[in-house]
Amino acid sequence: MSLIAIKMDSKDVFFFEAVGKISKNDYSNILFPILEKARKNGEKVRLLLHFGKKFVGYTKEAVWEDFKFGLKFLRVIDRCAIVSDLGWIVHLSSILGSLIPCPIEVFDTKNLDSAKAWIESGDLALDYVLDQEEGLLEVHIAAPLNSLNFEVMTSAVDSYIEENGRLNGLLIHTKSFPGWEDLGSFISHIEFIKSHHKKIKKVALVTNSKLANIIPGFPQHFVNADIKNFSFNELREAKKWIMIK
Figure 1 (cartoon, rainbow, N blue to C red):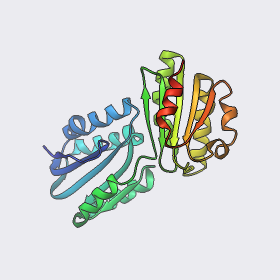
Figure 2: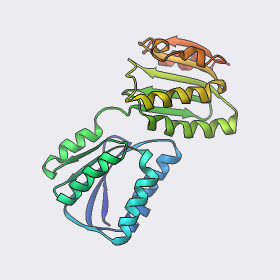
Figure 3: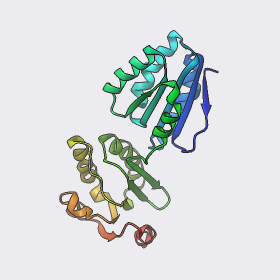
Figure 4: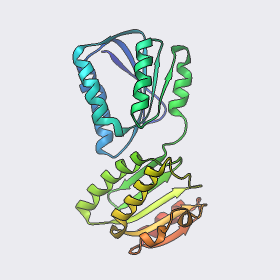
């Protein structure tokens, strides 16, 4: 097997050691299932890929699979670390890093531990849990938001609303709202609000920030929802309030 999976502490981090020659089967049997599952569940993953001395190269079929891999799962990857001393791998990784929206960092082999630390560090910018049974979307914000955050979340939320009509509640949990990476990210945020504001029964703002003042007109967007503010440590109380029929 050319891609050997190595266990990492974080459940959203996948570490692969490339050994021998990577084939089409390595993509279809190892990488694709992991990322397809994440895509269907509206999740994001982090990849750590190590191309060491035992790595030989790619088969011709694998090169095409690599291209399709990038197109299909680009929005599923939150960040990617490439570890290699091979010049062509380093060069290709640098080119890809300038073309795709997720952060890519390249490390040489002696800094494998640094790559592990980087891929494990920090929380996802936006992490969420969609409780299908209770109809509750729980959003945790830890870093500046980007457009991809909303694309992934919107896909999961729209599927739920299509089946059930609406969400019972939206819970936004952030200690201090970090803002957006760029103007496009801000626009994506507003578009998400405009598309879903009539389909949410309650909104709980669980934060030490005055989120309603940070996001222009935030309460007005949810005119059909009951809105209540909670402090950052009142997550349990906020959930209880949303669950009251």
